[in-house]
Length: 390
Image (tube, rainbow, N blue to C red; front, side, top):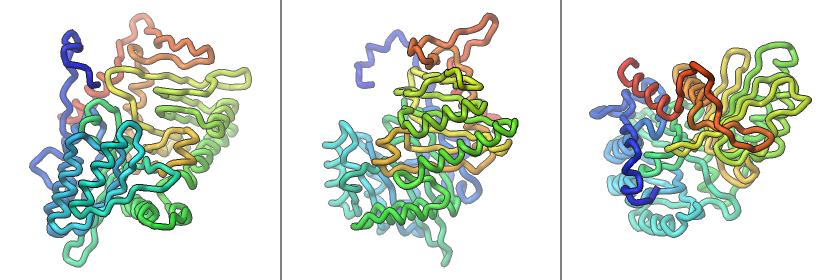
């Protein structure tokens, strides 16, 4: 990532990120969100709308407050500049800054000092627990009416890494999602961290209180469907699959005949085939020019898919020792877009490797006459086509 550009002279340049068609400037992003949710898919979509939203909030006379979590910030962060501008314009700005982001500890200490000098309320998380959730909420009072806007992301709010990290960010005004984001901030700002506050979250599964059990319940529903000879499917995309309880639950699903598909970029501690499995687990890893960083979960749910994005991998450290959030995708169009992206990745036959019991990591074989699918390029083409066709 930080090699001299000359190293890459022989590599075909990546296509440029493009602004989501609903958020092309000039537009007021909050007015767009008043009408519908928007999903940004990085690095195919530009990160600019996140910065534009914060800048818009900073100068909007009706905006009262901005609350945001920050894990890894860019060296010359436009996010920070927007937040500082908001404070100077009389907004109350709260930042939950995780100082222990690996390799960025020194930079985050410097950001803490800068933000506090400007009048931002900075919280540094819990003594024994990282704040890894990527959430934001903007509060606006307009003619005695309160409006709130927010987002939940799978990746860091960093305009530099957003150019080569594959992530998803949901922008929304959904009241239930926003209410849970506010509950999370109430917890993170409290001098006495009472986990009962997180247990009050009704829409967002939150670690460390209920995320593992939430996903176990969803897997159990697919298992019950399979045992009744009904269609049952689970698709999980992660950076790492390590948690023993969830792995065992996936084994239980495979034994029941659930169609389980995994996309795991890093550590995968699960067997993909056993004699007791009615269906083997289909598992791949994609290593390509962009870092596959998103966490996405799809449950068939009797033909009414339940789709989630999350900041958390299925690891003990994420589920038990970090503040994390998963977010349901409720908009049907966005659901289908995410499912289509996952299907493109599952059909990849250029940069996808098979995860099997032998750990050979062999490339997915391309059958004779089968089209070449380099999933990252195919996703770009899919989203770019939507830019013009809607």
